[in-house]
Image 1 (cartoon, each protein chain N blue to C red):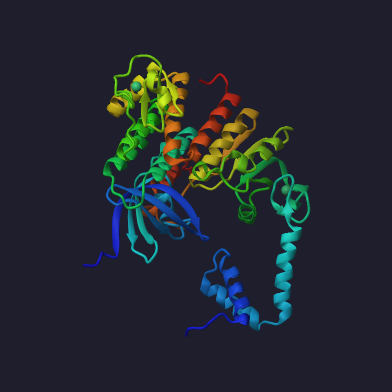
Image 2: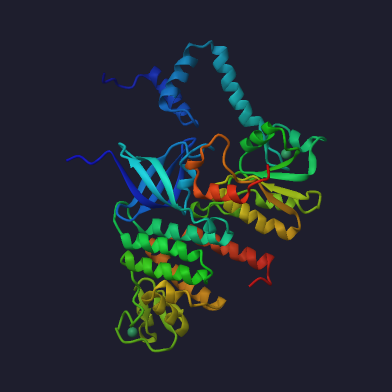
Length: 203
Length: 261
Ligand SMILES: [Zn+2]
Ligand SMILES: [Zn+2]
């Protein structure tokens, strides 16, 4: 079983290694994908490589909302259909996809690209908060919906945003905290349950 | 005799770092195992049964299974979620400061039940209507004692003479206070006022019942903070990240709400 490095296998190993650095892909999956690509027609792997390169080259951040986009401003910021008085603040571009998928929100977005995390050295200047408060200056936006994560970092970011936005005179709201759909009550933690009770609604 | 494959412990979650897509590595501070680490799988997914019980600044009962490298967290039940600490911008920040201190001053697997109790008591105390800066200073002084860096505040560290009620000097390198005559024996020493030294001595020898009666003016608060931070910086050879955040918040406060205390 003891084999020295073989030049041909080296490239394969490198691909396996690169792939296993991707989220959700362990060494086993990385190996499976590598051998799949080896067997697949070269156009297919060529297309994949080109698409990855293109995404990295063409995709930039929208200069208004900081969502990822290939045109600036992004389609959401350009759209005539969106309500310009409301902006929903999220941590990551993927969060926009999740909210858009519900189809119930019609306002604009703002992507922070992270959350405040003092013990990891991530302060307010390391996420796009200044860019958000700049957007609020002209008075068009009347409500800011805070949709940061419900973990400690997301909570602290929301509290901080409220602290800096409220003095501007814009209404600040936070997504309701409650029990995730499909969960069993007995497994809920105190924080979630407390907030679910406080935020209860009339049926 | 082999160690059991799984075990349970009471713990306060003091750090959380991302590992792969949905997993976290958690640092737990426990009464009898000291500081330990565990992997919590799937906690970044919305339906995780573990996530809320494993948030930082939570006191939980945690079950772990031994692994080759890292142990895996298999279950967790909240003992106290410290909700007040998680719903106020300042209290979150103070809470994070405590756990960063504990994380920085403790090696892994060294039992220190008194320090665990101190952290727990201090998290409770932060939820009370008290001068939180006093709480932080109290915590620092007691923590120094628990980890073997109790500063000498009763007599001059160099000549061992009792300190006169005049401005003396705190020396981080000497680990205590110098009298004016001995000030030159250390390269760096911070002036410490009569009142500041009184407060530090009181905190070092009292419990929270006594400490909570103290209320400091802004100037004395800053002086004590500067002294304690100089000592922390000397011991850790760097500043605490969450201390920088407290400074930023304070600046923000001065900027936005000048009339608010
Ligand atoms: Zn945009
Ligand atoms: Zn002396």
